[in-house]
Length: 277
Ligand SMILES: [Zn+2]
Ligand SMILES: [Zn+2]
Image 1 (tube, rainbow, N blue to C red):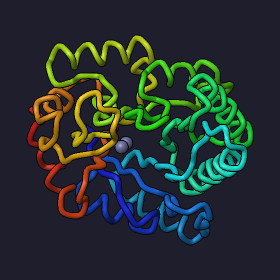
Image 2: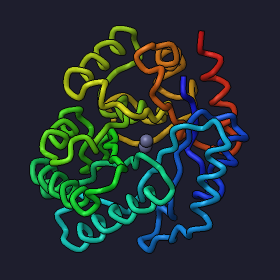
Image 3: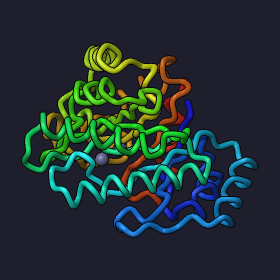
């Protein structure tokens, strides 16, 4: 399995961290995820990133967008800022050679799901059109559905995928903690099979480009987004054993976003590797 972690410290640190942990794949922030004003990727940073990457065995590298971005918002100012920030994110990824940017579909903040999904589609089309010659794709992540967040049903992602103009530039990231909190029960073998059958029917495995592999501190169906270390949460260890030995997912990067990363990412990686048969 292509195992890896989210890495902190941005493009100057990510590959070093990934190498040290023996990651097959990594995720990073290309800029501070809590700020609107982005850090520019200088030519020097990009050159070093690309050469360190070429010398490593890490592949692919994926980006996670800023926490502030909400491209489903009905509030004009936030929506404008979000579209612009996503556009710049795609440009930074292109400069670094990163093929995918992962993002949450966004929150409708009171306007209702139908309206939120409509704005999401318009935003995706807007940003994809502005970056039409880019080979960077957007991955829409399954969410826990906390608050007014969209993306807690596979149908939400399918809705957007059907309506974007550049469909080849849209993929999906499945977060195990989020789907569990959203009400997809993967704790039994039967539930695991049913969930992935639904995923395949509604979204299609060919569009699955990444897993976020997290146990859940939140309870089943709670719609609360709280990650836990592998085997310590409400999903438990067994479903991760099934995932780690599921031949359908051999080529899909599985990225940890578990708590206390510095101390626990090596532990969680080892737990997952030991589950591989
Ligand atoms: Zn995630
Ligand atoms: Zn989360």
